[in-house]
Amino acid sequence: MSQSQQTIEPWLREIIRCPQCKGEVTDAVHTAGDSEVAELRCDTCHLAYPVEGGVPVLLVDLARRTDG
Image 1 (cartoon, helix red, strand yellow):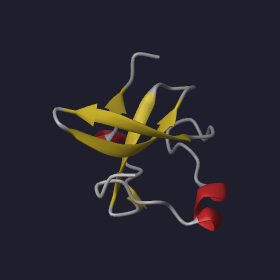
Image 2: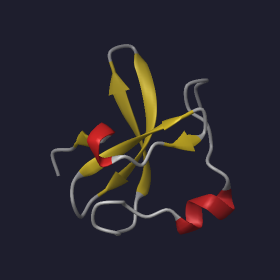
Image 3: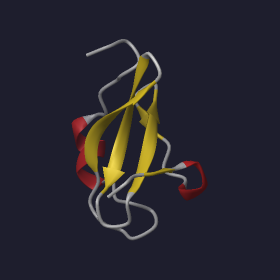
Image 4: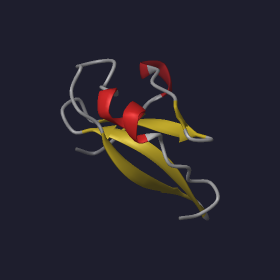
């Protein structure tokens, strides 16, 4: 695991849901240029939320669209 990726606390990981559709999110990594960015992905509404310093940023306005 690279330094840019941080693990989310297990107790928090169990309760996190997508703020848009309330669906489950999965751990993922997005490659941006030469770095890897940890994120949480929702396969229902095709959004990926960044994880910064081990803290998920669950704001729909900051989410990245995925191809599905």
